[in-house]
Image (cartoon, rainbow over all chains, first blue to last red; front, top):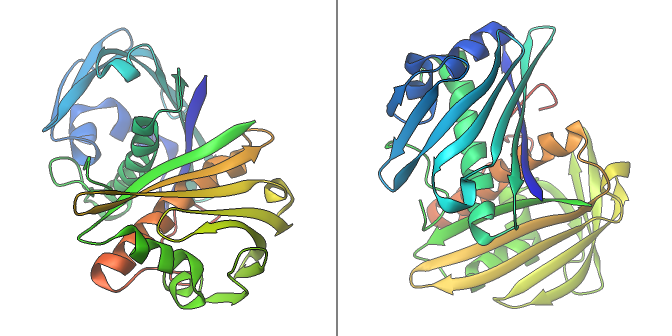
Length: 147
Length: 147
């Protein structure tokens, strides 16, 4: 089992601001994909759609200002059953986000791609909160020929 | 043992162009850090310096247009003994780069940070080749409060 790990921090903001961007349709459409629908509360499912496909996430945990945990219940086969952890912590003026996409069965080439894409979307999340504008799909940063 | 994985692809360029950016001082200073010195050939050591510290890499393998392999021989304790793999492959008009920073002993928080930083530097490498301008340190993209 192999994981994708990342760390960003959002300056001059709180973990509550990050939590809002992870747990509201308005927030999620601002940094990941404009085509986001569904319920964002614990036990509900969020549908994220991209030009190339999409993912359905079940919200397993949601603790305001502290953590969010999703399980992938629909979408790309490599992602099904994997979990996405968002652990939030305040350090002075910085809202630190520890990210983990856990449970990949093999370190396939698609995992390499997803790791780089996650980084670009996390920087989109940071930009959304700090500057008011992220880069959600379909206007996202292309990292390779898989987009 | 855990690894950092990434994938980028450089459009309208060849793996030889990427190889040049990985194996010349002129290339390396254009996307990773402006303070890069040393020898870039197989068996030589490259010294990368940043405002916060630096790394010395021994070049273990260097195959034009195909692959480069570095071993970290100096710098941050967590990095010593780890290896950085650059595997290059042409796919039509795209030079695909499979990146692996292999051999972390533990998935420490610093590894999360380095994963996100590597992604931003890989996008800097892509921008250098595609657009003629990367974002090497000290003008690099800050991802968190560790910069």
